[in-house]
Length: 96
Image 1 (cartoon, rainbow, N blue to C red):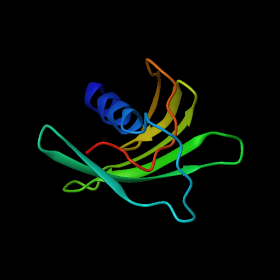
Image 2 (image 1 turned 120 degrees about the horizontal axis):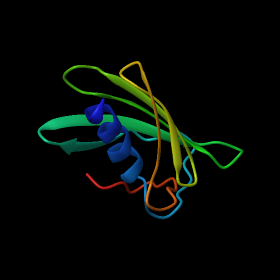
Image 3 (image 1 turned 90 degrees about the vertical axis):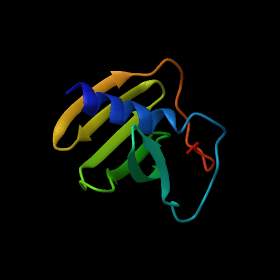
Image 4 (image 1 turned 135 degrees about the horizontal axis):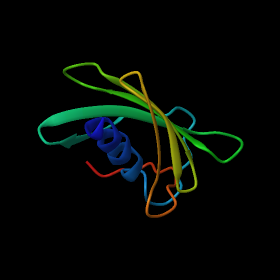
């Protein structure tokens, strides 16, 4: 369960930056402890950000809804919910 929370937190943390608007969500990726994750992010009309993706080798999926500093959703079929240290905003320039 700790691994699932970390994956979700890492994906959400990759979004901390400035706001970027794109017509089609671009696939982004990051690597942690030798595992690569790909995801897309979409800003919804209500200001929340949807992050959807998977781990490349295992195809374990995650779907997170970010509302300010609160993140909730699922990771590999398990529910996750946590707060970040700061507000998470959609970004077109997520760190790898």
